[in-house]
Length: 301
Image 1 (cartoon, rainbow, N blue to C red):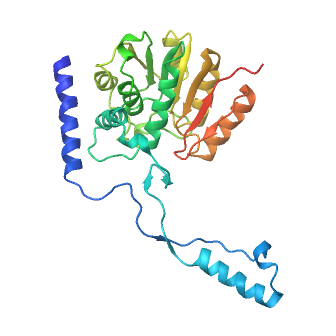
Image 2 (cartoon, rainbow, N blue to C red; image 1 turned 180 degrees about the horizontal axis):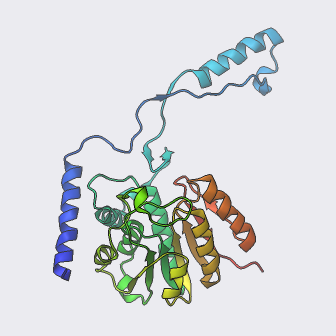
Image 3 (tube, one colour; image 1 turned 180 degrees about the vertical axis):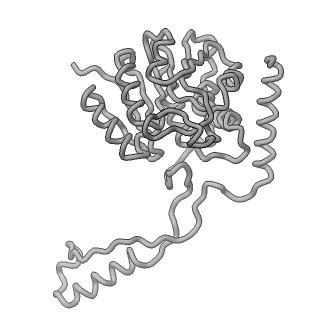
């Protein structure tokens, strides 16, 4: 496929997304309704301690009804990707973010917004910080390339910066066998997984120095010349594989380099495995509301 054909395909997908968004109403990410808290407290506290016991009991009941047991309107202004928040999100209106997020949606090959705003925001934050460091970018578990296409779209100087992006994946559409971590036809086709390496290569063709490495991790790490890593995105959906890959790449990550764990909070298995590895390699993991984990590498002095 020629570059002009690829560009036209991206433009066509953007047009479909924009048409979809224009033909929808309301706010896809606004929670509407009421909530009831499954909580009560019979603790006296300082405010009720001045009253005699019989009155205290009545006041405690009143307090529970008023503050916990009466349904209240949900206070959240955004809900998506497991995150419900009422905090300000100015990044949603930034032109650079909107451009990068749209590019992610193009990579997804879907017209419906997948609600990955916070996930993309955190990836962009990490990538822009890592652009200041020596070393290349690595993603293990690329799929169709949603996160890294958003990342590169947010970095205007990528084609001239001299860094490389290594994308590791089997580039197969089948789900993972939970025991082996291998793609298996028995697990069915996953829409978010890549159909083929060639299709992902075309998706990234507008950017220079992007190298796809096809194969099973961690073995396929030997197929790429990686010396220094400034940024690592780990998204293998398999605890054992993620531990093996991170342990093997850890010494290549530069001081101040950032690792984003896509599924750190998704399952107990991944959470426990990577927490144990953090103790072994002596790093700290910041757990985020999107289930991601963020590591900034600092050498203990």
